[in-house]
Length: 253
Image 1 (cartoon, rainbow, N blue to C red):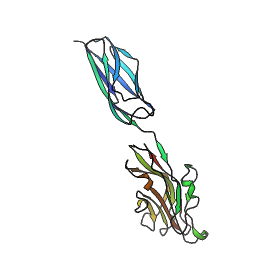
Image 2 (tube, helix red, strand yellow):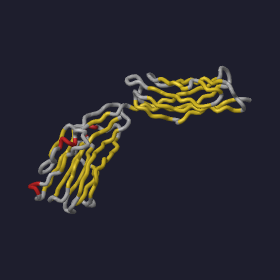
Image 3 (cartoon, rainbow, N blue to C red):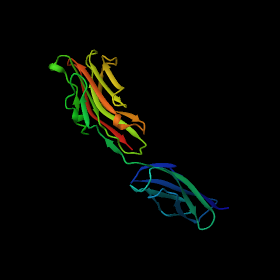
């Protein structure tokens, strides 16, 4: 008996709301099946559409399914849909796919910088402006005498809701040239009551070394109160070390 099979790949795709994504539909002929197979889709989320290219297959072949979502209409979340192939009677076969719709990416930057030690960092606003070419830097008091500076950044705001993914990102560089110096970076999730270490070089016990420019990514819980997030740099040096914080921000989806 002639027949055909239908498959969909990949089984799941993720798209940012307002965007589109594609799947490949493959029809395989069995036992000499040669009928035309129109393709149809059902159970897509509201505000989304599915189009096939081509819309039908001559017994076998592949078609590209494009699913397009609409901002403000397509709901955030996961939906299973069905693609059906039917040559006008029997046989009829189908394949199931999954569409994951996620919110648009929102970037939150700190709006408050506060000196937290004897004196703050130079140009603290540079860690808030999103400019990858500028930075806040730890200061050495007296142009060579022992200096101890600290700066915290806060005021990221509440951010959008609901959300599925939250990442705190901090771009920095540091060079520890003396084991008695301090080159440190921390973050807090409770308004500064407690601090989590990203790195601490020198006097605090970490290896005294050069840490080249890089971005640290800290995943946060989707339910985290983002108004309580803070970032803090600490720096203590007689002149042989340096610390630069280029940017701190939160990405929310």
